[in-house]
Image (cartoon, rainbow, N blue to C red; front, side):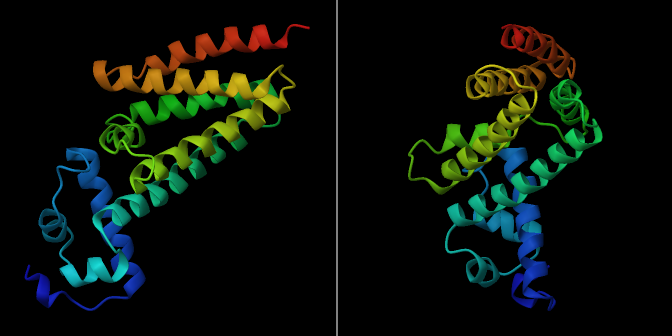
Length: 197
């Protein structure tokens, strides 16, 4: 397709298509490895379209991460809501969500952790977007720990995040979704300890 002759479409639709295409490529090949020309060719849009919506490649990466992060958190919230009102079941559902992700056809590890590895400066927009996503997830888990009236919910939420990120790395490395169950078992021990008076 000739990028200079792209068909007309609503600006928001082009922006969303560009974000979705960018995310797919970044997950496949990494953030820095995907060049602008490759992205434009895959999305079938002109360079002007990209820069009309995003001031730089880093802006595009951060926006793609924010969009995907919102989708992931919405899926997380839906899984927790489906678990019902029992605080224990809601906490356990965190690992149902994790196992569902690990079992999905497009699972390729955590793109947010990968962004932190590629963008080392605190001022880097992709790093800030990844940090914001991880913080939002941790806050949700902390709220679940609070609902369950567990001691030291902030520390427990951090420990859950360690389990989630560790399980994610190993599920990607070994191609085994069962690491979600291993993380669940470790979480049960943490919950039991935090439940003691």
